[in-house]
Amino acid sequence: MIASCNPATGQTIRRYEEPTEAAVDAALSAAGAAQREWAARSLSERLPLLRRAASLLRQRKEELAPQASLEMGKPLTEALAELEKCVWCLEFYADAGPDFLREDIVPTAAADSRVVYEPLGLVLAIMPWNYPFWQVIRAVAPILVGGNGLVLKHASNVPGCSLAIESVFADAGFPAGLVTTLLVGAGRVAGVIGDRRIAAVTFTGSTPAGRSIAAEAGRALKKQVLELGGSDPFIVLADADISSAAKAAVRSRFQNTGQSCIAAKRFIVQAEVADDFVDAVLAEVDRLVVGDPFAEGVTQGPMARTNLRDELDAQVQASVCEGARLLRGGKSLPGPGAFYTPTVLDAVTPEMTVAREETFGPAAAILRTRDAAEAVRIANGTSFGLGAALWTTDHDRAAALARQLEVGAVFVNGVVASDPRLPFGGVKESGYGRELGVLGVREFTNAKTIWTGPARL
Ligand code: NAP
Image (tube, rainbow, N blue to C red):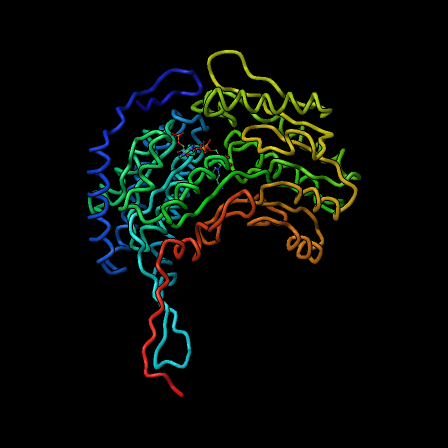
């Protein structure tokens, strides 16, 4: 049984029967047949359907955004913005698809040699709840453009969002079953990965779950893309624009109630500007309004589940015991909701819990540092490697430092964000492979070489 629960009230929203094994089998067969039909269509036949899905999502956004707020607690305004981004992503791939899948002609000794990009088949997408629409759309758009089908195992706390996504693609006129939702718990994922009709796996979620999914996919020798956890550094050097950096810091850490893989989590600040930066951050944090995600003016809803809120609180309390200074927050709100006060910890050192582990919620850790070289050492001193922000007004220095950071993306004087035009992904324990951009499309294609003789001597 899958049950969705409103994290603002603790009340069950709806229960869903899990499909039987026979129903999963039938869904995979239908998805496989739909994928073969889809792959046989030309790109120019596929692209209008992506545009149609984009337009349906736009039409339905007022109806779909509340579903995200209800199931995982994000403020309604953020849910609406998330859906707008999904529309953009689908439209972007409808426009860019032909370019990204263009055959590459490679001069060799052959009369003609080229690389063509062909579909892999059915891709199993195992997705998290934190951006319940965006995480799926950013995976599905490049996967479909490439001629593949998608079987979606969404997080168990957002079944309504999962079914809503399936409906958009069905109603847009894609072959029936090409985008199929399986409302199954995590315990049934291994069986689906091993199924012969699944060609590849894309997973976004925590590092521990990534390890076990990678092991299953490895056993079955199936291609995987893993987008895992992060503990992104946000480096502020002495010559940074402190006021802009502080505003961006609070946006990056606290939006989506801090539940973003690429949220800034460790603020590594050069000592001479640290007091000014902390003051500016606190002023911004004091403007955050915690409450009902549907209420006007609320900027921070509940966390998605009470167990996740309690895990965050344990990390914060452990760090205080280890010597961190609690400047704001550090409390769960009383009542059945999963609310946590916006939290700022100063005097954090790299050994403390909030610096070593991923903090997936509204808690900022400030680490003071001597100079840029030490900042980079601290930034890299983690098992994660997703994104990094770097604040300095010296562009040459930024360019050099950006190359020293062991991450998948560096944003200089900006908030790390996903963008359909740019590849997205991590290194180290943040995963491997890329979503989005041209690389995102090609991950789930067979890059086939076709060599035609005779060879020139
Ligand atoms: P999670 O617990 O790993 O769950 C993610 C998905 O994996 C859910 O669908 C979950 O299903 C499933 N799952 C969990 N354990 C599994 C297992 N052992 N085998 C197969 N499937 C399993 O992560 P989350 O709490 O939903 O999301 C937060 C995490 O995701 C954070 O670590 C965050 O950094 C990461 N994340 C990364 C990115 C990125 O792009 N790198 C983006 C967003 C989030 P159930 O819900 O049924 O358990």
